[in-house]
Each structure stands twice: as structure tokens, then as C-alpha cells.
Amino acid sequence: MRKVWVIGGAAVGLGMGFVMLLVVGVYVVAGNLVNGVTTGSRGLAKGAVPAAYKRLVQEWGNLCPALSPALLAAQLYQESGWNPTVVSPADARGIAQFIPGTWATHGIDGNGDGKRDIWDPDDAIPSAASYDCELAKYVKDVPGNVSDNMLAAYNAGAYRVIRAGGVPAISETQGYVKRIRSLEKSFAAPVKRIDPTRQAAGAIAFAQSKLGTPYLWGGNGTADQGGRFDCSGLTKAAYEKVGITLPRVANDQYNAGPHPSRDQLLPGDLVFFSDDLTDSRAIRHVGIYVGGGYMIDAPRSGAVIRFDPVDTPDYFGATRVTEDGAKALPTKV
Image (cartoon, rainbow, N blue to C red):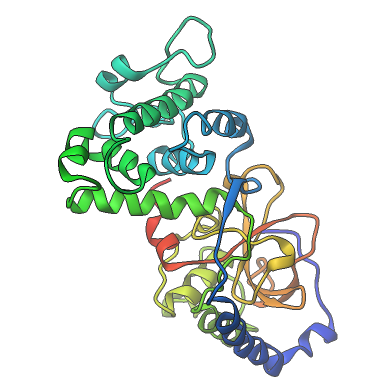
């Protein structure tokens, strides 16, 4: 739930025709931009890494050329969802999910306090970066992309990468490399225009069809719920309609693609709101941008799905949802 700014008759007057013009516009923009415009990244996207770990990720993510802050962030998010106390069924521990045996060999004293603590992010994050870069050295002469080969070595072992002459033909390993590389885009700050999401028009059309529907906390739009939604239930259903499966809650949906700046928003982008503008895990509201500074959202109990402005003090940022980005998200974070 979030504080809302109610829009009067002018917003309602935007109406069906306005939204459908935007839907058509998405396809026009996509056709103009998708050819010849590439994406790029440098540094970390605003708030994508929790403030408590941002300095460590930025510093240690530059430890070697094969690594980047966004790539290191993607691995940590995939492994633990930034939870420094988590333990996996395989006894992988902490924010970087080291197995004790691997930690014994590769853990380092990142903060210089004389201890190597698997549970301490000040040690575990530097250790994750150090381990990545050590693997990169092992596979530096292997053909192909050095970062891909490093990730493959992390998953399958350096020997298999060397023997295969690149990422080995192991479905688990190939999937791991693809997931991390896709997640990397969600943690990186874009430096060029981001390609439009072609499915955006269909997502907007779905959200538009739900205008006026009463809000329901936890609502997924099912028949037993009277077809009602909460904020993230609406966005999930909208993208599910066009074949993209998003996580259920807003803060997990934030990592389903790269993050356009405010002046690069396009219809179909998800827009997010939070009381803590330094941490994507604190996000508590999401809507679908429709252009002109407005979104369609399910704002709160007692309200209906409607148009609301995005330029509010709690505006956190945006995500351009991609199919690969959504598929790369861990099932539990």
C-alpha cells in the first residue's frame, strides 16, 4: 500500500482512446529503436543493491577485468537475495552461499579484522569476488567470452570449461551463465537507450481493461476474488497475459529487466515506489506506466484500479520488463 495522489476528472478524461494511442505508440517506438540502438551499462543501477552492501559490491566488483559490480551483484542476488544469514539445503552459507569446504580454501579476510567469517558480508562479498577472479585466471586462455567462461567455471569447475574450450554443453551450466548475465542487466546503470519491450502494448491493454476494478490486498484477479487485484497482482497478470511470468511481489519484480531513467520511460515500463530510495528490497508499490507522467495501478484498499501520477516523492525507479530478465529471477529471494 502507498500514499496516493487522487486524480480528478482530467485524469479520468484520459480515457480509453488515450491509452490505446499509447499502445499503438509502443509498437511504433519499438520499430524505430530496436534496430541499430544497442544497450550498454556502467556502474550500478540506483538502489538495486541494498545500501549496506553497495560500497563492497562497487569496490570488489572491479577486482579483475572479467568481473563488474553488476555481475557480482547478480551472483549475490541469485545466491542469497542479499540475506546474510541464509543456509541452503546443501549447507551453503551466508550472503555469498559458500560451502564450508570451499570457504576454507577461498575465503579471505576482506575487512582486515584478522578473521575470515563466512557469515560476515564484509568478508563474504570480497571472497566471492576473489573466487570469481581466481577462476577467471584459470580459464583466461579458453576461447570465448572470459566472463561467460568464468561463470561456467563457477558452476561446473574450471577443468570442464578448459576441456570444452568454452562454456560446456551442460544444461545446468548454460542456464546458470544465461541467468546471471540476464540479471546483470538489472543491476547495471544503463548508459544508452534501452530497447523497448515488444510485449508492453499487450500488458497495457490488459491493465486498461481492469480500470475501475476494486482493489483487494493479495488479489490475483481470480474468480473467487471477484477479479480483483492488488498492485503487484495487477502487474503480474498484465505481463502473464503476454507470456512473461513475473514474481508475485513488487520488490522482486524490480529485477525483471534493465532500469530506464525517468526521461527514458516508455509505456509498459513498470514503475516502483518506496519509502527507502536506497534499497530495491524495500519497494512496496508498483504500477504500469502509460505515458504522459501517468501509470495504471491498484493503489490501496478502498480504491479502484485507476490512473495515478508517477512523479511523487516516493518514486523509486522503473524496470523495462524482458522475457529473459523475468526468467532469470531466482524463485526464492
